[in-house]
Length: 240
Ligand code: CAA
Image (tube, rainbow, N blue to C red; front, side):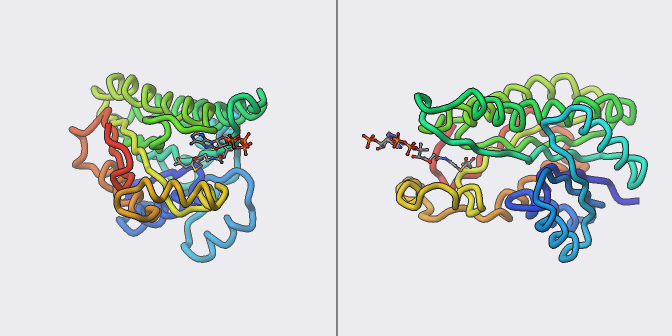
């Protein structure tokens, strides 16, 4: 029986590429999504990958979703915490709501998904958790105090949990994508986007598939010695 992988925010953007790549690699993939029913239906139609709707910002919904998937599909071996949002604003204009929405989804969402699954993985003595952080969690970004804080938090979470999971054969790793050609990046004003691309040594935005291949690498059964690490994939824009 093939291993089961759950990808949050897995029907659009980088998440859709991760779902597709894991499926291609032989995993039974299920994708979570929060809001866009139309995109999710289209994604399932095109890929055959089942989708489940709930917000990762809601702990109880995460716990229920995980239980339902394990019941219907099987034990979740691979969790990819990919769901994320932006609410960009310079700090002097940032509202508490913009702060909370981003922290609730991009940081607490990772807790909410991992916490209910953790005892199950510990019991089964196997797990692969891949957290999709961001270049902006590493370097900070003007207009993203909320997002940068959440994504940096994801890296600390990854390193702490890697130590706790090690003895149960659960690896916890992070990937920091740079600017990838998704709707999220296309929402940045064109002028700002052009100035960002000018800072990327490879001279272009990344492709979602260029992040997905790193997930497949970390999810593998024989990646058990790689834990607590951060893979940077940003076209040379920033070195840690
Ligand atoms: N450094 C310094 N100054 C900057 C700046 C920067 N990077 N970006 C903007 N500014 C300045 C502008 O020059 C302008 O200055 P003046 O007032 O002197 O003209 C000022 O900031 C703009 O201020 P405004 O009050 O007009 O700002 P705004 O309300 O229009 O919002 C912004 C500005 C929301 C920050 C906008 O610039 C923006 O969207 N920036 C992009 C942020 C970004 O990179 N987001 C990434 C999204 S993709 C993603 O998150 C995926 C991932 O993981 C990589």
